[in-house]
Length: 471
Image 1 (cartoon, rainbow, N blue to C red):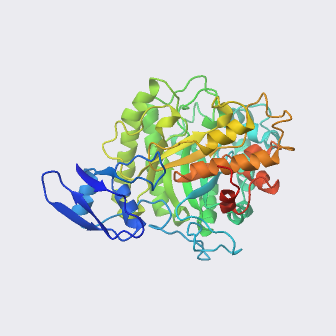
Image 2: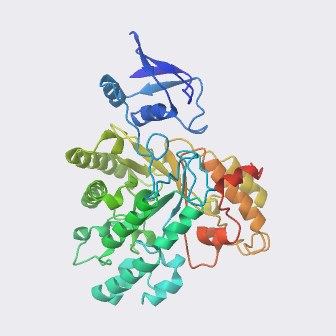
């Protein structure tokens, strides 16, 4: 290992030194923040509890991968948008560059911060979010996609789901997101998107979704949106009795070798698709599994077997394709705060790793008062694994109080506006955030970004939250 002693360089830094213990120093020119982030991508292990760029007077360590990069005289930057890798729309708008105005001339974003939404219930339907449409599809009281397909039969289900994919999130929705200052979408998908992984004699999922996923990614890329691809529903189900796995499984069946292998085939296939189809050109992050079981011995094998093998398979696929170092995917895992253990424990190389944090105060045991919610969010430390994106969060509060006078969304808009501000101020101390979700049929803006903007709770100018004096 090498250590870097002293201050983290800022945009004005000209150089810093890497000192080998018992050896001479190696001077490295550092002319911008982008160069520093390249060191992070190359394997500098840093803690982020104070935010991404506030680590003064620390000792920085480079792993063997970083040294190998240095030995070739080259630095690479991780595929997170910002100063080190710009992405632009077909109209040459960079949604991440704070000096690059959008088409309406008003939206200015801090470079690199992810401000996004989930397109929930598009490719993995959660009936609680869209009960009206679920009924219109013929799925009635069925709890999951698996159950609906089994009820309708494959052909009728395919037709119903194709209509859903065609209408739930449209090109117009993406354009509306951009007009609201959104620069990222997180796309939850199920492993059955690769249809040859489905056990035809025992598993029942809609077919034909890939064409709609490809179309969505093409639209998003044309608009300059960054894309996080999320394996939301894993083979065998990573959680029991949860519709986000695509099935109402009585047990979590994911944590065995043959199911890991199906997931490995999925992420390997998805990596190939991302790098070979231009519609996917703005997909920079691939999440290995959403919300695995917490506090269970089962997840030990996920961390010791599935995570390292997924890294190896994705990197091997990229190497075979000749993908350049600056274009490697960020491989994302739930962070340690989720409760499934340290995702890096068994990784021999966390090259271009990233981390997902889900933060719902609704279920966090936070004292139930408006002042407590705002104070908790203002002081929330989501650091630890770096870079972390708060990939799911909302404005929802505990069920037993959510419609009472002090929490009613129709009368408490001022509180929810302040709480939204407090949350994003906290989450932007990390790499950023994606709200759950873009739209619902709940009639409740606390789960619905689109409705919250229209209600005046979420501003179109997201930078304005810093002027509210909330935190």
